[in-house]
Amino acid sequence: FSNFENLTNIRINGFNLGIIQRSTFSSLQNLKLLDLSQNRIERIEMSSFFQLNALESLDLSKNSLTEIDELALNELSSLKRLNLNRNR
Image (cartoon, rainbow, N blue to C red; front, top):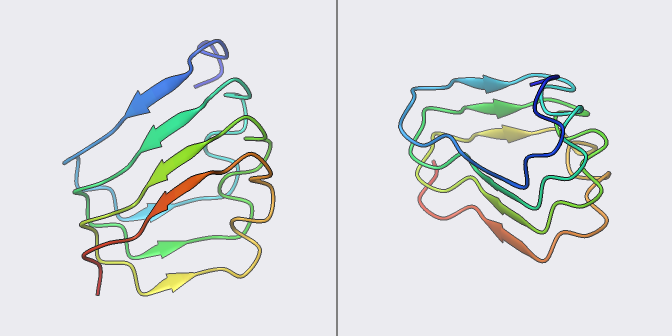
């Protein structure tokens, strides 16, 4: 995502993603909405959302989440909405 640093909204629904790795979205510092719903995400690693200080809405619903690292959401100082509905 390094060429898309001005994006404010991303919807990646239904792509069968399994794991959100460290710093995947770190170049998207203007991102306000990240929708990762309807995938197969099982685990979110530490620092997966590193440097997403502007992120206000994170949708992880309808996945297979069983593990979220305790530090994975630490960087999200502007987060107002977190949707974890319909996971395992």
